[in-house]
Image (cartoon, rainbow, N blue to C red):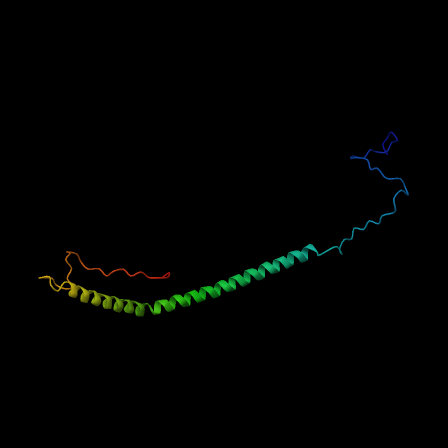
Length: 133
């Protein structure tokens, strides 16, 4: 109490209480443990699922990288064979072209089969390669 004899005034809005016996008694319990999953369990479960997902993704990416490396090594190993096959195919096509040229230019005097009429150096035609290599 203050020196004037009145109780000290509390800050905030006054609490209005209902009259006694108007409503039935309500039991207020602050223990709400049975109302669902604890937050720590939710966090730990989510963390475990995300960790497992990242682990599986990293494992599959590692396996994919190894398969890609093996495939590139195999392609590199057979590259010489593929190049030789391409060269043989080119030479066969060139021989066919020379035969056709000889057939059509047989009656032209001074024409040499296979000799270019242009004054440039010969370059092998670029072959289109399918795929990413």
